[in-house]
Length: 462
Image 1 (cartoon, rainbow, N blue to C red):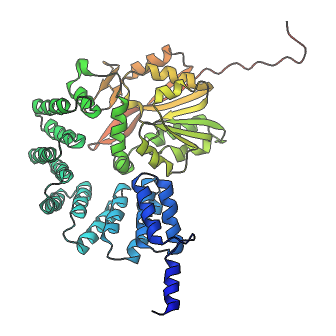
Image 2 (image 1 turned 90 degrees about the vertical axis):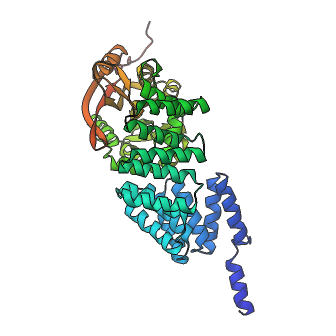
Image 3 (image 1 turned 30 degrees about the vertical axis):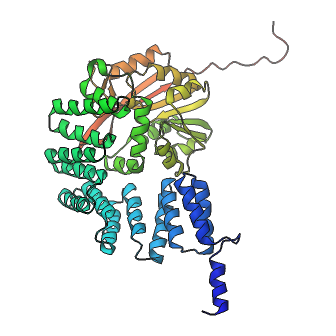
């Protein structure tokens, strides 16, 4: 290489400020690891300006964009990384992860198989392939490849947990429980493995042992919100809280954020479209003039459906990780981590429309919510939400899956006594669970509209 060629390479290896790109990359990775995604993104992009197909910068920027809910962009950048370096097995693995969490399971499967082709003894790729195969219904191969991952890395608690889930889907509840116990032995007190062990025992109708597992879990972690709520769901009676705790909701949905949309798509989830249809019945010609609150917005599935109606759309949720996904939809003007009832109480006479799709299934008693929502709406404003439908014998019931169901009679009585103007309730199927339809209610309620008073033409009134 002559002097001129060396200078050209050196020039390419620096960003616009003269810093070596390897130093910029190190700075970006550090910011990324510390959660400063804005700084990390800026630095990754500065590298890509200088070298558009820099494998590491494209790979890590793709991972970051997926974390921020911009998964389509993420796929594009990671594909650039593997095109530039066809032997980049970690990038193929993360490309598979993005496809998996977007519900693109066949694409994810091919990425993981590519990693294994490049690195036959790649435990993470084998484990990930097993998860996808389980979700695709190929339970036998899922068990086989996760078992291979365990042979390569026998101290990984998460591998045993995933093996337990694959055995459960296969219908072998005994082996599922054994694998979950092994996961807990390697890494005690992990919520997901305890819950999976409990589920395998409960489905196997070993109710006494299932309750024993929950008690053991609570002995080790007496304040664990997931353990307490799951115990209440199994034991019932005096143990049932009037609503799920904030910690339970946050932990559950932080853990669920990455695969939330993918899972709901497989369940034929209809709550957002039902809510949007009810909004359209009230506002048949969207004018973009409403102040709208999406209460419990999650990953923002309602957001794009509500934007035609909103001059401002606010989303609130208890799960920060769900809100990161919602941000990627670019539908909301504001996203806030907030508890629903407290937020409503602090914003009186603010909103024209409040919607809540499948959030109030984590509330049993609805009195505080109904009053807070009425306070937060402007006169003539509307509240639209969904609930799972329960039996008439109980106002509400905490079910074994951790969600509450409500009787229609309770909802009708509550809104009549709370001073709402109108309340309509329509039976709807919200989604499928274990292949069976989940019956719910779509509720639309309105606040009394103040009478229009003609102002005096002039002069002072006595």
